[in-house]
Image (cartoon, each protein chain N blue to C red):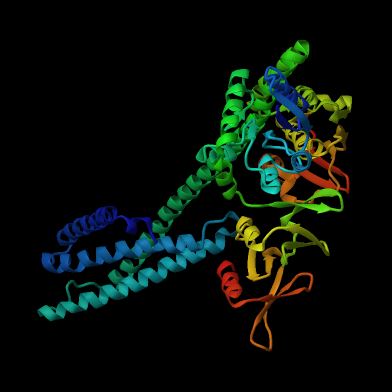
Length: 351
Length: 239
């Protein structure tokens, strides 16, 4: 539906303009060839309204056959044909309307020569052609606005995801449990309590700082992960052991913040913490072709049910974050054997 | 007579803190520590402690499940770092809990309150558990205690004073009445289709009509279970 038809006020103004134009035309007509006012106005005013509405109908034509550089010829021909058909139709209605003049005892409302009628058709066709151009401009502007809105909402979505990731990182459960451990250590081992406080502060400070960056170096993320692991190691005691194997070249590779950390957190939450004897988390990073490959693996309880939802919200979030940032060029792969769970992330290499 | 206490928490430092706070109370005796939910359940059943410091988030079984499965209703002090959803239910039923990290003062207060309730009886925990849907059951496998995830149970059958949980082709018996169990299950997943049967809807394959105009359900394993008239109505109500 034409946007003008949705708002009565706009439509009224539009039709008023057409009627004013008809009046102006009538004045010119009477001056040039003496005719009577009533006949000329009676002919032109309804016709102006009809022409105005017919021009609006070009909107549907423009929408159905939008301008495309590849097919400009065929769209142009279609528009011209539509304008021509409309012009013929309206002229047909005009001759019929003119003939109703006989009801008032005249030959017609106005007298027009066949040449004048031909000119009438031509003017109509040109008018509808112009209407098509104006509607094209209107549609182009609408498309542009829609594209801008989509882009803005996409950017908003990406930002929202980053904030969610950050909030997930600042897990209150982790914070309060760590504080409880510190409270316990103060009595048992004050030096360890102090060290744990410093690691905890390091973790939160680093998370807040990195969370605001768009890209960080892998070594920055590793520093964050190491603070985190140091805290967890005190909480879990000898249940947690670590093996970190990062290629030297990868340390300066760039990636979005908080990609590795949620993997390590998952490895502890769903792996180590569920095992009485704990186990070893292996963390690796390598430069493979034009990709940065990150791997985190942890032992899992072989008897626990293989619950797909046990992947945790963290992984789901990470997946959608990488999708919005890299599209199809980043991958998250999961592999579970009887006793080992591995997550591998492949990102385009950026230095 | 000293108060016999169990500490259940998967973190050694958290247990050490409770031990430290308990040390000033000379009328209390620490009888055991458990580092997971299953171990806690075992200690409760075998040692019958009078007071349990029970962490809510533990591997294998959560603190609430430990209570559901052992039937322990009094002499419990919950400890937790942060359980948004669980705590709303605790507050609703006025069940006391210690929020980590807690002070000696707050600890003493909770201990005092728990002692009071031990004498007076505490229906609050009962009410709290009534709201909780059962997700796992504890069964005795020979001499060992095992946790059975209800999600994986095919159907439950009443057998005299027992219920039998059908899981991976085996029956696991537990002394309980089927109507009592039914009330604890998630009604969207488990339906009592017959006086003696509760089925897991995830295992449902088809509802069939027999020649004698009665209904049976066929499960994924091929097992057929009779459906009573009221069971049929309940089943249609859920489906």
